[in-house]
Image (cartoon, rainbow, N blue to C red; front, side, top):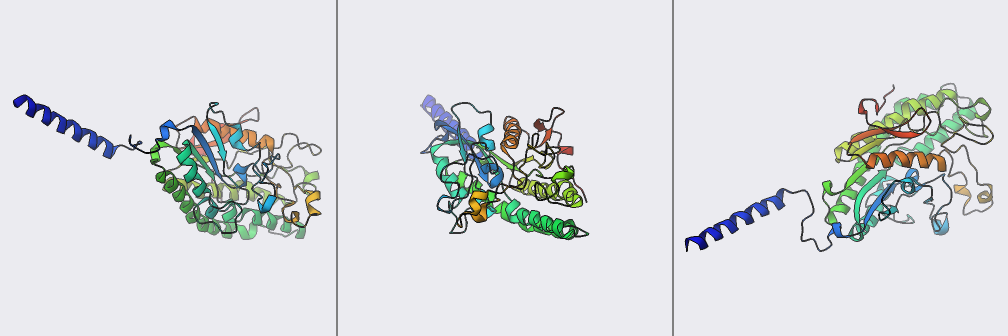
Amino acid sequence: MRAHRTKTLLFVAVSGVLALALLISDQYLPGLPLQPKQLPAAVVTMGDSTLSGEGGGDYAVGTNGERGNWCHRSAAAPIHQLQLPPDVTRINLACSGARAEVVGADPDPGHAEGSQSAQLAELAKRYRITDVVVQVGANDVGFTDTVNQCVEAWVRRAEEGCAGQLRSDWPRRIERMQPKVRSALEDIRAAMDSAGYTPSSYSLVVQSYASPVGPDVRPELQNLSGCPFLTSDLQWIRDTGVPQLANGLHEVAQQVGARFLDHSRAGSGREACTGDPKTGEGEWFTRLSVDWASLQDESRAAHAMQESYHANAAGHRQLGRCLSEFLATTEETASCLPDDRGNLHLATNTASALPSHP
């Protein structure tokens, strides 16, 4: 009788310990209908043109204007440059031109592909997603409009350039962008939650943007043949605008518990129009590019310059290498910087990761 009581008490005690362990654990519960650890592994990229592979060429069928889909997913995109085990599936949901609402759960009904986080929710049931990499915010802050504004300033030879107005307007744009990006990241978290994941069971990475242009433009290319910008504006874009955007995205990443990879100085010395004026050798970003054939087609004409000032195939390789190095670490924050040989590598000295200029 006493032995039976002892076994009963032991069983109750062990059961209580197991129940408590399950309650406080931040890992997968063992009884999930779709056990993620038994599914094939995958890495997913989400966001806009920087991760879709815009500028890299060789775009996937269905994303090069077909039925209004201009996502421009390239075979050169960073996800295809990652050093991953052969059994890991690479999935690119990023779409050129995407705003935060498209990455989140509430896109414009007219978008060609709809919500990226909704697509992620379905993928999370079929794959064991280990990493979700997100790069979004540039379209919400109006980066393309800013570039156009700076080109107009070059045409007019405006005394203050585009930077004159942007010095006060740009920080306000970033402030308006931040809650939109946060909402998108929260939608991503919710999509993963719906499939049984917990925050510590996968890595959520937010990336900032590299400056595609800088003040070291070759003089013979500082025109419509390459980079029509005033030198003062190029200085502002590289040293102020892009770092301020990085700081804004870093703040949002911290708010949602995401890791952060800073690209604000990733293209230093390899921006558009800094290399050979005839071949562009050494440049990681496209110059002003025009698809003349598309200009002859009314349905494609609006996208004839879509590749301008995006990373080229060489740039995507470099950005992918640094991202790969970051995913292999447990660092919460790091930056991508060129080394002495001109290749991009991870720098984990966070004190210098996020430069700030007035």
